[in-house]
Image: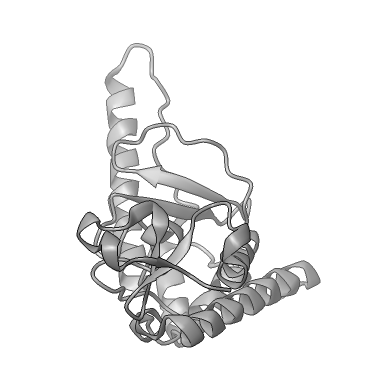
Length: 212
């Protein structure tokens, strides 16, 4: 691992440990829903299965936590999105590669190919809309190192300049200083972390902002 990769991995490790510390303190239900870290051999097997290299920063995250079981279908990331399990990562990657193959097959039949790109093999899905809802989410471009959005209907998404490290650092910042949060508002329902942008209407009365 070169110095740049080692730094990126350390940034992710430090940011995620900050997230875990805050969950342990304020949202133990959400902390308990996180899966244990993956064995290195499991990540190696995923690389072989998908034919790509897992970047050091994502490997560092998965060694700490290999997915989120969620609470009432909601994960602990902004928007109640969830860190995907490695099995889900593989399944969604295969599914979306299939979408791209169909687009390319249609292009071969068109007099003027459209060249639509809905997925690249270098994209690794890492965060989904919910624990069981994989219709949209975040992927990590293993070539550029930046995050991007995907969705079921393949609509164009705004360019994102977040790396996995900067994204998780912002999550940790929002949990540690909720009053300064900009991406979403962290709160609690019981002992679970629930973000304000996606509070279930049936639970709105029980939702309270996270205190600093």
